[in-house]
Image 1 (cartoon, rainbow, N blue to C red):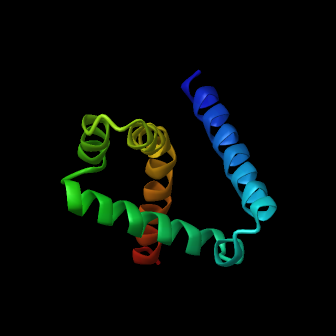
Image 2 (image 1 turned 45 degrees about the horizontal axis):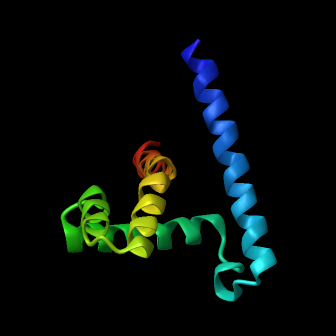
Length: 104
């Protein structure tokens, strides 16, 4: 049964990623639009690593932004927190690629 849940989550995440790509195209996001999935994921990871380095962790950054009491930054914190499952998937793919590079 857990494999079914994992499959549903994977399908949902693929749908979300496809929707993000469509929104990027509709918004004509220039340089981001021309990135490959791997390049986009690398940029996302770099930004989250910077955020974590500045605050100690992504969740520390979320708490910091919420603690400021500024509605726009609270919304930013909500968006960061909501993105964590996708971030975990990106990290998992990156680790899988690194592991695959070590294997014959």
